[in-house]
Picture (cartoon, rainbow, N blue to C red):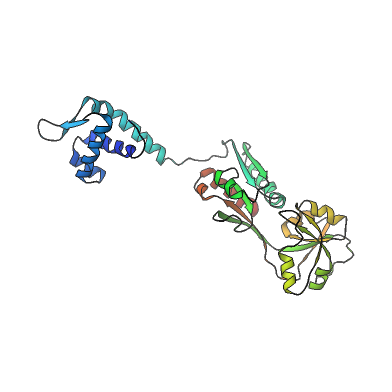
Length: 301
């Protein structure tokens, strides 16, 4: 018998028919009409090339053929097993699981999340949980999330159309400069900010204009971006050895407070935000839910 198409549903009907030996009672139990069930029985007889059930000589109900009797118990057990498989929700126990989670993140997002996430899981004794942080490929990120190549990407808001998102970080940008910078430690003005030579972190690499340049242009000002880098980790090294400045997230700068000074910006600007981004097909996956909870806990710590 070919189990493709609608035949699995037919087997469920056959199971009830073999139990009840009565089309009327079986139809009531299955919540379908008697003619519909009779049509299914006819289809089953064709598939099995056997009558399966025949009218009883007493005129009341039906009796099973030898094949029908042979099928009754194995079919019941098989359908029960199938029901258990479908009903069972897989659990995730981080204390026993051997699992590698892959997170797509640039170096700044990874630096914010990774240390706390790893400390959190290791302090809990979850030593068989592994994390791989990889640079996401912007043009492939949607498919990487859909296939599970990347479990969660750490991105800005709405970076992946149609993806699920969970906010993790929302904080202000600040201007950073080396300690002992000739500008001094005076509060910034729009004019003094624009007069400085800046470093720009360009996610795609090679860019010399960002959203702050658009904001300054609205004020009739322009800044000079002298250096463009693709990686946040390069910025503190350049700042420490030059008079350039850079606008960066406050949480990133907090790691370099011993060698860099930071100042509030002299204009209103949107905050730096970081979101956990994933494909909706993993919404109810137990392991994925656990990972999302750990990401939330790691930024709250």
